[in-house]
Image (cartoon, rainbow, N blue to C red; front, top):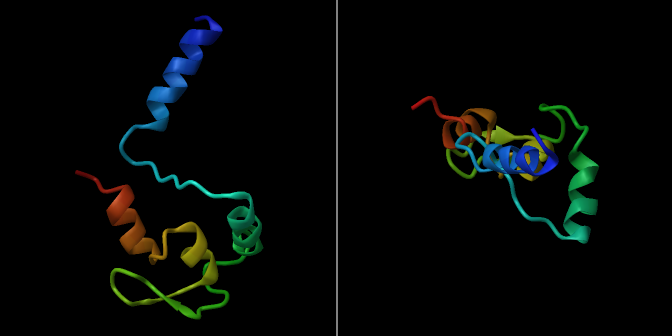
Length: 79
């Protein structure tokens, strides 16, 4: 496989079902990185936007504002 074929295969994987991505600007990344290494139970000051369950700052920033259960159902459902 040449380099071009490898890139095309990677691009196909990128858009497969079961992936979550969002576009961030430089300032957004800087702010979100503050919560990247926090534990799932640190700073439980937010609510899931789907079920209203308490979520951590990490989930707010890195799981689209959802608890793990809602995030997984939304982006990684086993259909």
